[in-house]
Length: 343
Image 1 (cartoon, rainbow, N blue to C red):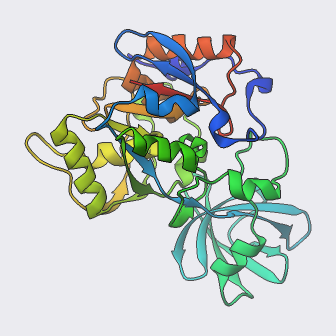
Image 2 (image 1 turned 180 degrees about the vertical axis):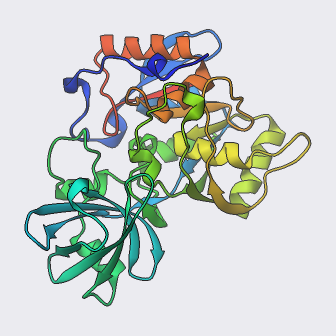
């Protein structure tokens, strides 16, 4: 039986990257053979040389929006709201701080001149906010919202984060956190992949509430997995079927792309098809992968569903060994950190 404590490891604060490297593709990349457990140290710029012509990279194209709003409570005191999902015109599901002091009926003020009423409280601590005082709320959020950097990045967001906490291929807005494995890609890396005959396509999964929810069940099977919206275009489905028919590897760029691919994985004899909807797929050791052949991913925090997914794909012992190697050899962890390629 696999327990939550099996996914714990000591992560010193100084190993958590607090800012991006000057160049996106300068990250280090650990190559892990998921069958043998063999490890090699590389640079991300070498990605094309570690894949084969005919392989297909599948990335999450969701765009991060400036989802973090700063303001004050009606009775005084600072407040922070992290917008997660638009549920109706002028209404959003959000996480708020300090949560203990913000109950239904509370009013929050955000500069300049925008207010929100707390309409209801959800089972996981989220609040439903109804905004007033603004005609075009999405445009106002784009102008006045802050980049939703994760709480382990211990600094205020800066102008640079608007560019760097975003992939170079991001398109439809909707995520409250970046699909971080894609942050390393540059136009020159994409051009090198094309030169090598390595294909590229995108799917979309808007990262929401579950990214911020801790796992509290010691028996990991009991964790209530969150739901996120996804879509797979007809063009992406065609690329996936083409790669599969030609014997190329389907390489998921990050855990969010992997969630989509495993959600829509066809049964025996079937093919990928255009689709959209919601997924609550939960991948942990013992669950089989049906679509993903290789995975590019950053290094994840202890005791998270992201780490569980990696262990499901590569084996818990191999992942433990790889993470210890990364800690011993100076790799940078989490969102702005280095990455690993699991083949």
